Image (cartoon, rainbow, N blue to C red; front, top):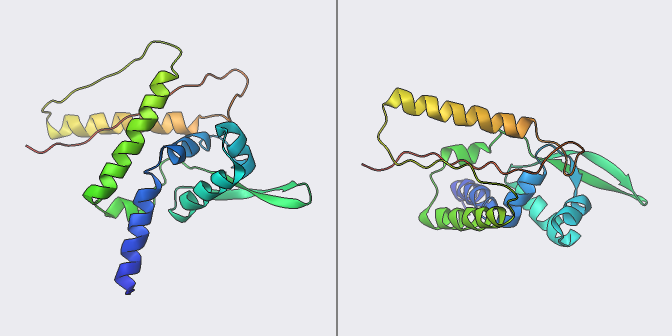
Amino acid sequence: MSLGDAGDERQRSSLRAMAHPLRLRMLSLLTGAELSASEVARELEITQANASYHLRALVKAGYLIEAGTQKVRGGVAKKYRYIAGEMPADRRRHEPTEADFELWLAAHQAELRRRLLERSAAIFDADAEVWLDPGDWERARELVQQASLLVHQQAKPPRSEGTKRVNFMAILFEMTS
């Protein structure tokens, strides 16, 4: 494998790390909380081995940081955290292959379906396929980015007193003419 091949493999690994509904749930869970693999497993009702496997993939791809350790029954458990707005440099530069995009899309569709089926209140949604002036498009993107950062930065650990479980999902993109 050449040096270029290794870089391409890291890019594919980073993109594919997000192409799994369970990993999307983990990123959401680890926004506002530092949790160990066993805590993630309990919250998502999966095995610790499964949680550890997916957490390692997200760390390797650069989506999670190891945020410390916790002593547990004669051992030490790593704590993980997702930091909003920090995206692996490889992913920012890399245009996904069609196969990578299809995996990403399927994961997001599955996760959106799960979330919608778990809703407890009316849905606020917005949908538009329109033509905009470039300045208006940029302003819309900035506003959604600000809302996303607010939601991520103010996220609390799961089931914190005085909080409510909510969903925030936004996808904006330019289309072909």
